[in-house]
Length: 438
Image (cartoon, rainbow, N blue to C red):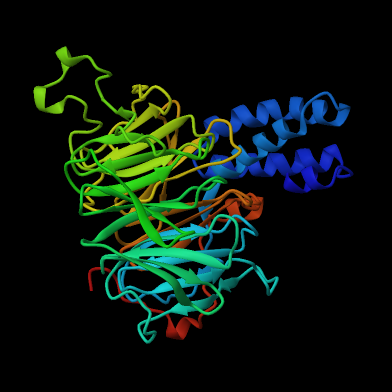
């Protein structure tokens, strides 16, 4: 279908044949109900697109949604295994969409090239640069967050339990700036849209949020209001001065960094109805540590996750709990969990680490669309690639897995032969003839 968007000369018959194959693949991936709705409306999209009556962006949105709904583990794509322990953080740069950062519990930082240079179906994403244990600049303890500079791949930022945040020169792999703190750093974030400031928000074991200025290389401001360690911070993708923070004190706060009078909002899971809340739960977003925080792509909503095994969706302007029910979302991590949201889809989807799997939810309805299984241990981070509608996940097993859209359905012959007895090509003289009883 992407071929049709890029090549309008592709015949409608060919496009319909491709969509039928994709629809069948969705059936095999157990998302047939939603797939049927999209296949049913596909004829309307094609007719309107061909006649010039419909916005091509609407057609693109439908295809992006179809691709997300058909995500499966790509067994043909491997990632160079560099990390000796778990992987805590991932980030894909938005300039070319080609390079991905990973930060590990061993303190190592790796830059991967996601492009298939070989052109072969089976290939390995190579680690093009590594800040390993042999480097004198490497973090001494676990790297908790990594992030590309939003406007240039020549720089990236990492933060660690060694109480430092380092700004790296990609070319030399040397820190251009090092910020030191009094306690372990859990998280940091640069605004993806800021033009009037170059602030990095930093959350640590200290309840105060530090604002560090890239331009001056100094800490310029402190945000006070939390009562325990700050586990996650995120800048709004809509307003460059709006910041959200999540803490172990069960609270989520919204800040305007231009104001000195404290937070704008403290999110309340009961929407201010104190008659339904215990006194200690007033103005709390969760009944436990809040370690997951992510804005939707348009910045209108905020998604949070806590150790109370709940996930909540908030109106980021009013702070209202939208009361979307996601059910039980397993969360036993005491550190930051990296959530991800889709872009260019309708409806929007959230990718949430859930034990050794990745849960895919429809954000505004709370429906559990599917569970992506492939890891051998707890998943800690997810990163969505908006250009290709691909997902990358990593966790304590040290593996980085790529989840990609299904591009073809299983062949009819393959399906018909699934139940047929398989004839071994091994010489009968060498076959195992032992029975289960023996």
